[in-house]
Length: 312
Ligand SMILES: O=CC(=O)O
Image (cartoon, rainbow, N blue to C red; front, top):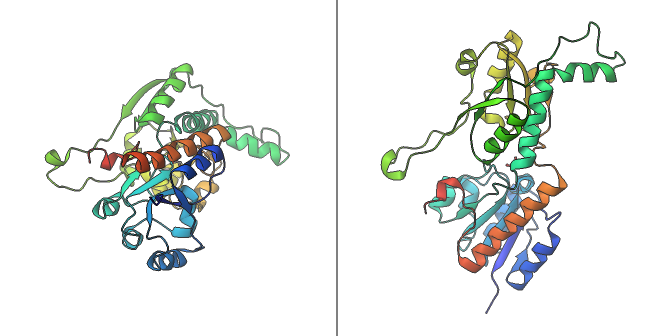
């Protein structure tokens, strides 16, 4: 019998052993395309017609572009599974995939420690106002003149967590070790029956001017989720007014672009999307994603389907 074919979109950098062990159950194909246009052409050429599973990385968006309706509609009909190597899957239009009979998985859990660590780093950095003096030192001005205002301790502060999934719960434990108490908010879409077919409102810009105004003046904001969760323009304005005192960001609305108002503001700590950027975590993520590919081939279903497809 012919082995099933797996399409590799992106690179395997760490889990080489696990990836090569796939060869006993599948043949791996890599695209020749170097742009979205070429990729669409390659799909239409029939080169991928025997593919049933695709493994994709966050970075592969540089070749294929977003996995949106246009792309999904040219993917080979036999492609039934997309295993995405990442926790966040905003590059993939899951509704379009569902409509075309494609199941999507992501990588939860493996990302929790590293992402919560970056969040805690940004919380501490923003509370202490370290960015201004770190810049001053490099510019030959020691702490800066005048020295920056005193920072604040995390001990006794209340941490609000928006999104109490694996990363949120991991962060809560870390913050507790720093003496913080947590309040949380979590979104959970209703079941199909209860929502009566109404489309679930996504999380884009759920934090904007109105929400900043409800917060305590001088609030510290950290984002390690996705940039678009917050209205970046509104954040810049709230920082300029002092409504937001300082902030720490790992994610941005239009990566790799960063709003000039954020770059210009020394009260903002900026990290270029490095939440999971460690050897240990990248390795765990690849291993996890490969398990999804194996499960798709051997059991006909993904090990960790995305939330929208959990009940299918
Ligand atoms: O941003 C990183 C991820 O979604 O895994």
